[in-house]
Length: 489
Image 1: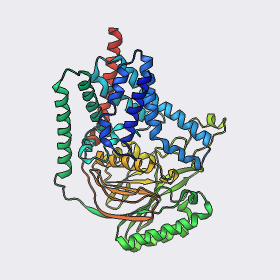
Image 2 (image 1 turned 135 degrees about the vertical axis):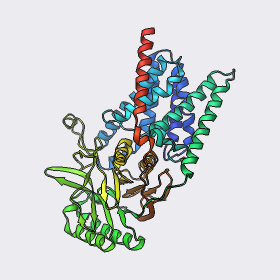
Image 3 (image 1 turned 45 degrees about the vertical axis):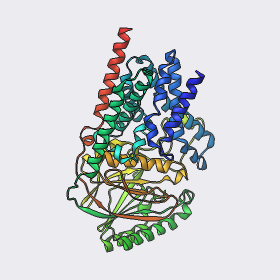
Image 4 (image 1 turned 90 degrees about the vertical axis):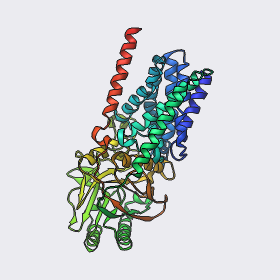
């Protein structure tokens, strides 16, 4: 067991090294091999499960270490407790993977099927998320990541797992040499590189282009939480919008999530100058802001056009658990825990719909929503021809959160064959093309304006048509194999 712990820990750390800020993606092609070896060498299902739990806890706990940056705003004990519980919750899926691996160790080909089934469930069940899905390790490798437009982020994971499984088969049969796993690996890489080359080099169809500007205001979070600074922040935003429109000649200006925590739409000294700038430059201005309807507060995106402030706002659908809302709130309040992010009690939106801005149909993502692929996919199926991700990573200072967020946004562009605008308060802001290449990128904790000419794409990818339905097939196969195994035993 001692050697197994060392192997599993090394494996998980290697896999972590494939994610930001390390960015060594090729490690993901060998990181699962010691995990498979150690689990299959277990003596009992319990031992295998414990190894899986350890692996998952190191992987998911390490990926979410940025949560501890919230101790600047919330209770240290509460944040540590929730990080620990969430780590165990996410780690339990890997315990399940290991237990099933062990039961099916004579059917090594089931490894990718079981893993993807569990990864998908981890992403879709209550308070789950697709963050640290291993497919994201390929986000900054456009030559290998283009297959995401076939089956999404989980298809990238599937590719990585098949390679790991084939490497394991090769090692397991030493000193005997089997040629077929090596040939299979070469064929898979050849196909993937060829598909990536074809996708990134094929001739683009004539498409309408718009000139966009992305503003990174760089307002520290402690200033944004001080209501006496809100007026200065709003005035600064007006100046930045004027600068962007004057210097770039952009017709669309994108700003980050929640410019201030106040009701910005109710402030004439803020809205009126923006409306005047919009009319003068014939431009659309989009920004994140809290919005109040009746007695409910929403994390929203608002639009100002040459016709004035739109009465419609996009309201965030996927709220951050323990940040923007509390699951089982009454239970946690009995032990004295409040929201980790102060002053952020929001209600979820109820409607998926693109933002219409003249010729542009925009797929909006507010922060966490860009992590979940199905929201962007549905928006693009409804006709969206540009993705807009509004972010405020200022909560997390210099941690890996900003780069991890960019990594996940990149995959959304590839899945949907769309250009994307990511506007972040303190970074990282970016303009991403439809193949995941970053055309423009800001520096963290620096005020700045990005601009580019962006095509409005309307193509439909295989992933948009089929979504994750193929994974349901894998789950059914997994259940069938387990039932058959139990009957045979």
